[in-house]
Image (cartoon, rainbow, N blue to C red; front, top):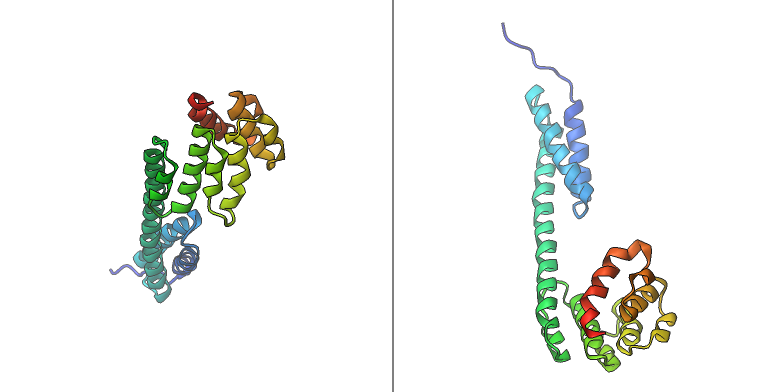
Amino acid sequence: MEEVKSQSTGFGIAGFILGLLGFLSLFSFFGVLFAVLAIIFSVVQFKKNSTKLAVIGLVLGIIGVIISIITIALVFFGLFTAVSETSRVSDSLDPSDCEKIEGIFKKSATVDCYIAMGIKLADPTVCEKIIDELPYSKSIPYCKAVASRDINNCDSLESWKVGHCKAILTQDISYCDPEKLEGCKIVVEQFEPYI
């Protein structure tokens, strides 16, 4: 006696909807989650009864997973490149090395490099080389305040940067914003030899 396959299409519909959501939200964690769930629901539907929606859900899910993996790899590679370039250059004490940084996050890494150079050299003029476009230009007052080694210059900064600035100059993490404590500790330790 042949087994009769169920005619329900619920898993196929769920696979299609999740595949569509996964495809539309590719660049977020939810995109990956929706895409993987779309594949699972579509495969379950195939086992019961193959439907067009299940096929479309499976295709969208697979595309979503592939593009998400590529995106995650590119972002990771870009972050890795920016971090390695910044640390390679920041060992130098020549501000012109900051312009040699390459990678996806070049502008952000270059700003970080100039801030590090300004602090290390105690030279606020280095900070003027920071890119004069938003959001990067917001780092110029912070860089100048810390590079000048004058704690009074910290008070004119944005809220959490006041704490970072004072913490670096006094080597006292009690100034750090509690919500940014871990990052502040790292910055204070990083610049301890130069203060």
